[in-house]
Length: 281
Image (tube, rainbow, N blue to C red; front, top):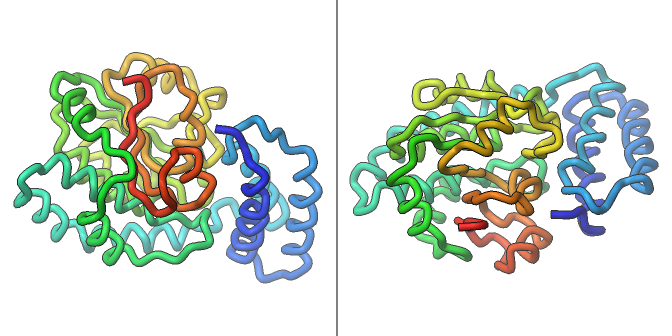
């Protein structure tokens, strides 16, 4: 997926929000904003939006010296999700189709997006999505693919939602690799947050090698690329991973909520629709 003009104001909004988390110094915030704004004219609009926006997070760290401005928010999101875990696990166990219910819960976790300006209520959104119709529903294809899968590569997205990803992975009978970001960026899951969410109990955690808030194959390390090619099933969570992999040349299952009109338009769904889409299936 390429970067659209409508992505540029979003990038600037992310710049202000991230800068204010990292520092209260107005001069530093102004410097970051001006530098990122000046960079807009150089952006390659043919690349995915997360690759375009990566610069802003590097600039925040360079000016402020803060490498992980979202750290405390990530911890709070994980704690809130873990508090919901027993209740959601019970819902899965009592459902007619545990895999489908767990997939819905995993998608519900995708509301935890600090790269967006929208507010969210984790518990309220989870229960809404459990009843919501899919904008794209390829669940039957996912269910069939998982029946014979020996290796599943699961691409993590945001830190808090990794707790919900765990619920889905617990319904998968295969060797699972859970891919995380190489280093902190926005509230995306790194190895540290994956362990805090309990992912190491159900999957082997690997780094994709990416420093952008997405899975960008040109950034990925050799171990990840080998897994990406050899896995029987690839499950990709969130908008950033969709933006980075929508043009991938292998089958990928995308689980996400379309939280902005640009993504919704690219998927041909309505904004706020939930999506379980497979490419090359």
